[in-house]
Amino acid sequence: MNWEIRKELIRSEQPSSVALGYFDGLHRGHAAVIKEAVANGREHGLVPTVFTLMQSPRVVLRGEKPNNIITLDEKLGILRSLGVERVYLIDFGSIRHISAESFVSRVICGCFNAKHISCGFNYHFGEGAKGSGEMLEDMCRGFGISVLARPRVTMGGEPVSSTRIRGCILRGDILQANEMLGREYGFRLPVVHGRMLGRTLGTPTLNQEFPEGLVVPKAGAYASYVEVDGKKYCGVTDIGVKPTVGSDRIMIETWMPDYRGRELYGEEISVKLLDFIREEKKFPDTAALRDEIIRNGKKADVIFQSWLKAGHTETEE
Image 1 (tube, one colour):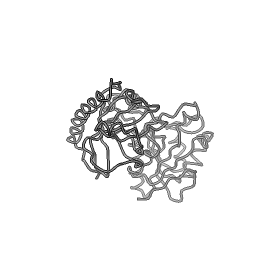
Image 2 (cartoon, one colour):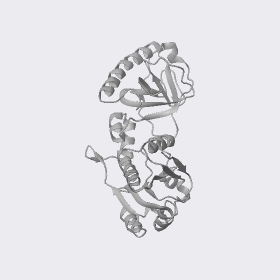
Image 3 (cartoon, rainbow, N blue to C red):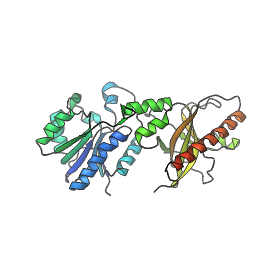
Image 4 (tube, rainbow, N blue to C red):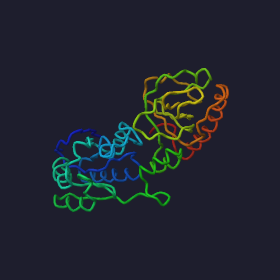
């Protein structure tokens, strides 16, 4: 499968089927939009394409701090796994003043060479977000471009949204966040050196620095799985500032009770959260901390084994 990332609005020589959106989190609703564009592209011989942005418009227009659900690298990896062959990854500041009419004529038609557009039910475009889905369909019709706005995806009677998922992550409700995402929430980050405290306690941990620009999960311990060389291992992941020993930044520390492999320092390792176990707390000493880690490990293993029995495999397909 071809794979290409374009950071400038370079004209596509091949006609394309394009999904439009910022796609923060790439939840079930976003995936439906993208899969529709990919399916249409394959059916009609068009390049499956995604148009997305390097940063949220809210960061540029309102000065808000980035509060993403996944990193950019993770977003691109998921897009590729969904069958996307080309991504236009554009700096929002470079297009913020393009009118809705120019966006259709110059970008969708002139740059993407689009024959089909897929977007969400609430998609807006153009300067000031003045362009609506209905306007998009009307404007594209004049260029012979079909438009399909996907209906909202709901769960529990409410729309699936990035805002709702962020709320779940902040509360530690990882089960619901995972359900709305359609996959396990987590991180793929480099392993860094820590204080080696876990090693002295007999519970060596995989240490990762929490990246800037992401929504910060509720501090505490989580049942997780860690993927190493295609195999999934049960994990206990602690997210926070380590109040017992102290830390000047948020860290992700994961103990894998059954892992006996090589050192992983410097490697990018995937840690996915399955459920919340307990809130962050300070222990009277390191012995009490060790006992709690062991207890958490037993709880995590029950959750992990149940997760496997639910149909998840131990190795990647």
